[in-house]
Image (cartoon, rainbow, N blue to C red):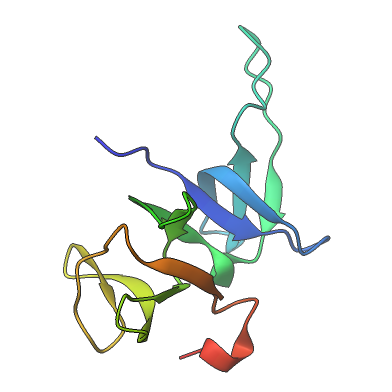
Length: 119
């Protein structure tokens, strides 16, 4: 079973955080609880408010250099085509062109840090 984790870009600092997701529909805010912030038996976790539009789930796959692949990542295929990873129809796929995620692919970045790749 793949780990269920998310990433999101902090509203205050612009830094990426990785961990569990907490979404509050009433205030429409999203928070990442970074991995490793719980203190032993004391369940005291840090909540980092992130831009909800930047939240993406880990696909369970890693790139050819060991980086975790998340939704909205821009990946480079073996044949030098690029694609944006999206979750649709219960499968991760590339925007407008279905392919299975392949460990031979490389990550070029993501659509949030690279506006030239935005949908």
